[in-house]
Length: 325
Image 1 (cartoon, rainbow, N blue to C red):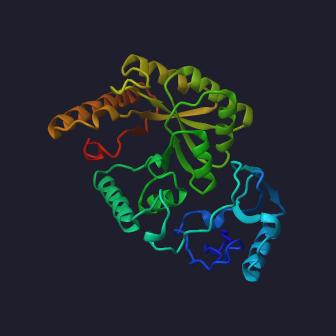
Image 2: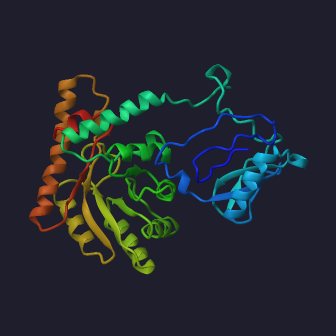
Image 3: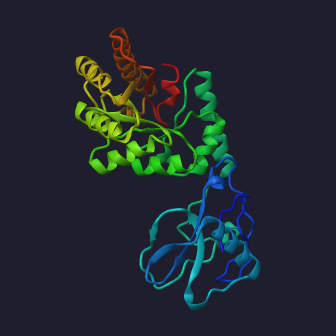
């Protein structure tokens, strides 16, 4: 049986196989110790439902771990962060035994494994580079998709996380990370309502590249009684998304700044089309040119009396250059 408790330790009894598994301590500050528990009943039909209150969950989890419970009728009891309903794919087999504590040679493949020493070195190196360059660091969570890793990055100096979707923002805010940038444009009433709802619990920034997007977000935020920070995506050459730099960016900034329920805070751009250039000198020159486009548009907004506190850019393949721009 695997369950998360406030102690941050894993219960060490598998009710199905009767195996004793190694204790696991979750990463410090991961937020998991603050997440409520929900007991779910997983049946062969592929559905799961909530059973009882969080206090009941913890009592039953502790009782199960002590009694080496082997549930009758092929029913597995497990713990998961609270949610209304979980749906699992239909399968003829139960959840396999946990692999925690096993040697690498015993793992079935494919298996996602992390070298924690190397990961921690990489996190520290990235944090140090940004600090020395006088820049703030907001890593994109698409690299790991793990709140536990994101909390380690924040402990090392990151100011928050970047995500691609509202559903990802929900996960990180639930884990205790409040400062989240959604770097992709969000459209559709349901997604906008979820986004605005998150503003009650976190300090979000939403990227837009068209007035209609910002206007719709402002309307939903007003209806729910919240405010949301907005950042403009500027096309610096990737030609995927983004408003054209120059007059178009300035006009969009003026329009967004007048909306009643959003706060314009800056601009962003992504030089992803330049990351694979092999020649270092050429790559550096073109990246600096892209950063100059952002800098010029930020200066123009400030001269016009508009807020541009944030100028966001860069990625793993370009941060060595952008921290110096």
